[in-house]
Amino acid sequence: MLKRLSVIVAVLASLVACSAAQAQQYPPASNVLSVDVQVGPNCRVTYRVVARTYRPGTTVTFTLFSDPVRLGSAIADGSGTATLERTFPVKTTPGTHIVQSSGTAPDGSPLTVESTIRVGCNDSAPLARTGSDLAGPLTRVGIAAVAAGALAVLVARKRRANSVTA
Image (cartoon, rainbow, N blue to C red; front, side, top):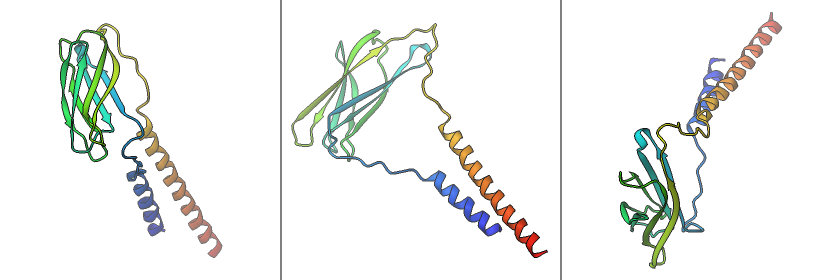
């Protein structure tokens, strides 16, 4: 019985540790520039810019417009994706801005992609809470419930086997 239980626990542990592989298309179907903006304490604005469809290994430059401000650059990885994580310049005025990525397309031509973002901060109001952080804990609870159920089945079979032989 202990061997069965250890096998079940090992299988469940491997299910928790594994995640499905994500298939990626190269080059991606369309040019994409996504900007994830986070406003922290004291209106500190950080961003994560992800640009896709660039030639792997080339430098991609990121610029913030209304007033051109070079945010930085990143090297496109093997799938043609360049990622930049930084804090917005302190002098960035609240309002609508354009983030632009410029680099080399897979065919060798110049490629520029833009995305419009809104930057603003209201220190007195808390940020809206969206989404949930419960996916990980709820998954663990579900796996624990399955393990407990499997253990209960094993105990019931053992008891039934002992009562039949007695």
